[in-house]
Structure formats: structure tokens, C-alpha cells
Image (cartoon, rainbow, N blue to C red):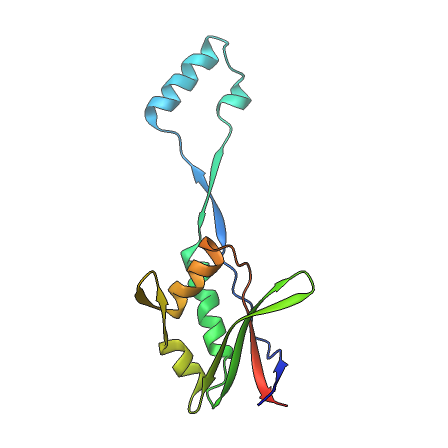
Length: 142
């Protein structure tokens, strides 16, 4: 049976990163102060803030929860896809005869020989496999 894809206002899942400030250790501060006093370093450059990009687990989990809330709690089909240029590549077609939201939320996917939940699977494909944003589209009978 052919499906017509409908954008149901479900956000795309893309792994989010956050910029965190790296504090100076006591030893680093002492060394920087010494170099500034001796004129080896400019004071503005010596104490410039340092940053590191890390995962933002709170934002990622919140996005996943929003996606689950937007899924219909009735029978239906869900298409997970990614976009490359002008092409849409289907990653999976998920069907439910009872409750799409609950069945998707509780479903498991094989990952490295083990079964994992949908959140961990999305994390792997978007972060480690470089898939990029995963779109969620509702499939309606054409």
C-alpha cells in the first residue's frame, strides 16, 4: 500500500552540542600571573576564556520528549528519513496497529549486537554515524 508523507509538525532530531567554559587550574593561574608580571604575555591574552564543545544531554533528551509528544497516539505509520541535497533517504518505516506513540517509544533497535532504546539509536546515527537531522513524517494511505 503506497503512503503519502505528511509533515505533522514533528521536530527533526539533531544531536545538539553546547559550549562550556574551561576554568583555569590554580597552577595555570599562578603560571599565567608570573608570565604577565615578567612581561612574557599580554594580560588580555593570558586570561582569555577557554571553551570546549560538549554534548548537551538535557537539550537532546528534551527534543526527544517533544518528538514523542507530537506523535499521534493512534494506529498509523511513521517514516524516519534524512535529507541529502534534494533527496530524501528513508531510514525506517515504523508501523503500529494500536498506538504509534507508545509502540515507537517502547520499541528497540539492534545496535552493536545489543538492543537499545530509540533515544540511544537516534544518538548513534546522528552523532557517530554522521547522518545529520532525522525527520519524522506521518504516513497516510494514498
